[in-house]
Image (cartoon, rainbow, N blue to C red; front, top):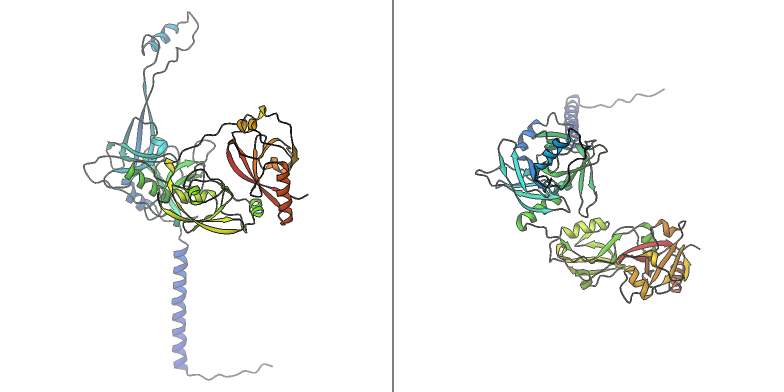
Length: 493
């Protein structure tokens, strides 16, 4: 039997306390619900207010290109056919020799105004090769445009129009704060149908297509041909991307569109507007990503950073950076991979002295590098190897690779600098790990375990040293037609 226990209390005082407690609880609950609603924003009721706000700054772009005269002859028709004279007269309109006259070819795209004095951003591929560029404004009227500058690497171009009155414009937002799932709105001239909008969400960020400086926002907002160069807006009416490309098997939108991130576009447009060209920082190294097996072979704790495969004459060589170093930090920023380093360096001011932290011989080292300008860097052309002419007798087979020491004849055939030592790959077993990792006949192995080699015995020594050190792999520096890269191969017996 349970015993009831009476607890005396002052009815008035306790009642007041309970009411106050209840009111406080309800108030706290309301605040929590309000905060939750703010964090999980639902779909907007309408995009109409946003579209009305930004549309005056969005433009249609029409380009005209003069196509040179064709030297094609008249279509083949049977001799004596009633159509023979017709086709002859038609082709002769371009001249007695049958050549056709030059013609005008038109193309359409989109863009947006970024300043009241008439600067306009679009894609480079929209205006590339154009002889005339005409801008159509949302509120009516057209103006001719001149080209200020282009950057094919990011597919961005800046145009300029002259207007009697200030133009309405839009501003760039911070694309780095855009999150997957955020609402966005695209505007442009899809398929030449005129101004229109489409809406969707940020599907993903940091997408790379083909360029070294790619930083695309992926969206499911409908983007079609003609939308190129148009803006991608966040819900505050700021441009966070320039609509550039789509992934589609049929040429139409399937919900996979790509917009170059505004934080990339801002830097490019600023330089094009000021200088008419880009001015990117240049470190002066050739790099590759650090894979898991490469990290293990080098004693790195994680597969991150940018592995230097070659250091030609330039800023890095002057600063003491060496092939085989792994750049882990640049100008105070951690380096995740090779692509991240390329973008970070390109965004850094030319001539700036930066701290570069490298991993070398099991420890880190900090070096000061004064950046050059990438656009001024000279491209070094290497001769192409003619592997079929390589006939020296094989020396040794290791890792499924048949190798032979370099000779002067082989150096000339394989595009190797005179005086370079190493092993030329004569043949590769297609069932080997080396073949799987891309080694082929004509490759040249110049280092093993980050030490120079000149013979098969040198290679065996480095493999044995890796085993003794407890390594599962040995790191090879391989050159192909002069281009270097590191490959890690297993040393298990």
